[in-house]
Length: 140
Image (tube, rainbow, N blue to C red; front, top):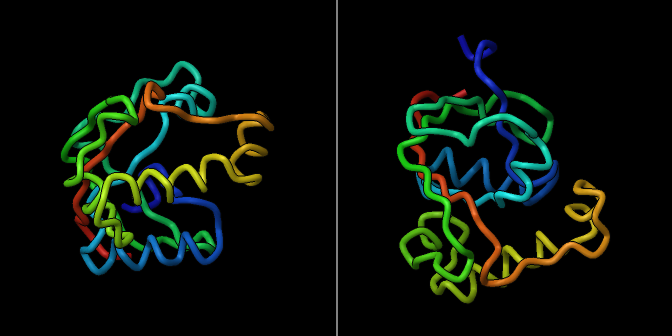
């Protein structure tokens, strides 16, 4: 049952989340990036996600949209993110630099900094990222 699975939220509710959920449903998005710092902040004491974990993707209205299953989890420096990962995020990035700029805009934005309760939060090449690859196992 979907209700037995943990919920996964991409970005914050609104246009970006809606775009991301649409990309997941179309098959364009098969990878995502989180920050190890965020994982430590949000899930203190919980282990990192592992291959085989399943979760329910929710839309901006908190409605189930799909069930995804992790097929790969890697922790790497932001400076080491590869082009295949950036492209597979399904957000139209054709270069790692473009991917990085788009993500830094999110991570350095007021919503993300408020979420972390760290008004001066920034990332650099040595910031550890949790790269996850997934597949849709069921549409919502």
